[in-house]
Each structure stands twice: as C-alpha cells, then as structure tokens.
Image (cartoon, rainbow, N blue to C red; front, side, top):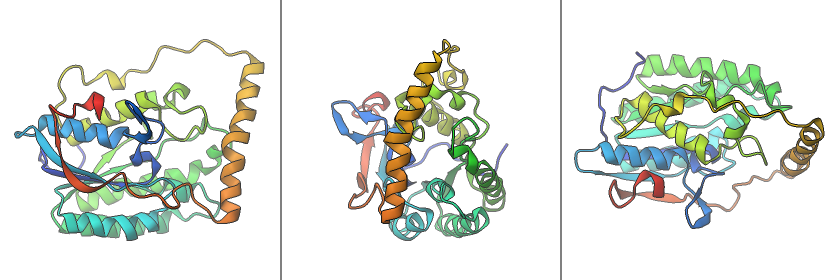
Length: 276
C-alpha cells in the first residue's frame, strides 16, 4: 500500500501540469483542436463514482510549461479553488533540458505538495515513463530515474498518491505513443492512464477496469526501410522544431490559456468518460 487518503470519492478535482495533463494527442470527439486526455477521463471516473453522480472539475494544464511555471501560475489558482483532489504532474519538460537538476526540481515540487496537503487536498503525483526505448530522449533516463525516486519519497513524507508510469509494461509499446513526437500518449494510452490513475486512487470503475494492465498483442516486424523513414520523419518533424524553439526561447504553450480554467460541474450521465 502506498500512502494517501482513505477517501474513494471527491467533490472537486483540479488537474495541474503540462501537455501530458492537457491531453495532447487525444482529441475530443468532433473537436480536433480540443484535447481530453487522461485527466479529463479520470474526472469522468470520479464523477461516476461520486454519490451525487457529479463532481466539479478544472484542468489548468498548458503544454510546454516547466515545473517552476506550473508551481507559480497554477498551484495558487488551485489553492484558491479549495479542491479536495489535485493531480500535480510536471517536470518532464525540465528534465528534457541539458543540465536539469532533478534534486532541485523535487525540492520545489515537495513545497507545493506540502501547501496543497495543508489546504486539505489529496495529491496525485505521477512518475515519468522510462525513456529507454526512445532515441535521443533516453539520454535523460538517469535524471528521470532520480526524479522518480524523489517522488516516492515525497509521497511517503506528505501522504500523496503516486501513479507509477515507470513500472508500467504496457506503456512501453510504441503504439501507445503519438508517432509524430513520441512524447504524447495516443487516445488508448490516455484511456489506460486514466484507469491506472483511478486504480491508484482506489476509485471503482464500472465494467472491465483491469484491461489497462494487459499489453497489446505483439506488433508485426517492420521493414528496415520503414523504420529508417520513420526515424528521419521524427527528427525532422519533432526534434528539429523543438531545438529551434529552445534556441529562440519559445514554448509550444506561448499565448495559450488553460482549457478548463474554472471548476465546473461534470455529470457522469451528461458527460460520460467516452465523450469527454
């Protein structure tokens, strides 16, 4: 058992973070420019489990945000809204940068967790995914591992809950990731992550809530020419533009606002998980 609240229902959930929590690569039905993602899906599970059949939900996450920005811009807004559950998942963008200090990042994160816990909110954290299978990004593996170790220690000290992505076998399947950038989950990846988060929180989910643990059937081998072509497309389409933004001091989230900036009622019946 990991530390955390013994509650299994919450009335106001606020999600904080970057593109992972914003939900990139999981477009909402009929609105390709709006993303749902695991946090929206988790909110649906929370609403379904709530005695009233509804919760209040806000998602303040914005793509490209670094941990200091999340802590400075989003945490105060969340505290003012007096939630009883907050997911705080950030630091991944920081760890991608050369020279990132996972010890410093973890210390700053813990200060925010302390503030949220003292305000009466339960806090859900998430470890980073093991990047060992991703070219170039796997160079950050050591930093991610150190940061993850800190997360477990923070959870033990502060009574937070941890969604363990590092140890999830299914998440290592390339088909769970957007082939264009390889750092954002597909709709299926977000669906499974929401179920994994619900399990970490102890939230009951109607129907088959264990299929997320089962890896996909093995993919057929790909021709070498196809593999090389995809690697080149990834470098041109993601790596080069990412480096360009770093050089120019730009972020993919510049000028963007949170998609759900205020806690609003989410009804399990009116907004089922599949249609969020």
